[in-house]
Length: 141
Image (cartoon, rainbow, N blue to C red; front, side, top):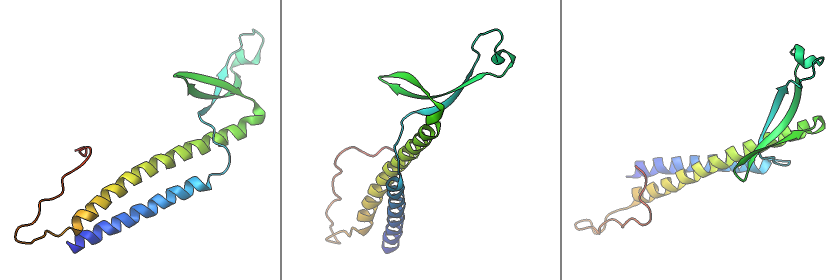
């Protein structure tokens, strides 16, 4: 029983450390977050004497994101390209850290339950009380 309890404690401490690292990533995030995807579009304008007809297409940068269930795209001027691309990258890192925190929180709760079970001793030894009844949703198999 003690070795199982020790293993669970160790795993819980490791999960807590990883949780703290993710929180520190979120706190270290400086600058605005910009939701969406940053992209580059190459197109042909259709003018017969333009350089795009020879294969050198016109480039434009854009930000796309869903709004009310529809994809919305906005042109990003060259002067804002660096700011927008960095904001999009920060947003992506923020969401990834947030998802990792959710995952680690679920792991920590499960390990807390395991630790409690590992530390339980039946009493009285000859005719112990039954285990506690489960409350809430049943865990997924």
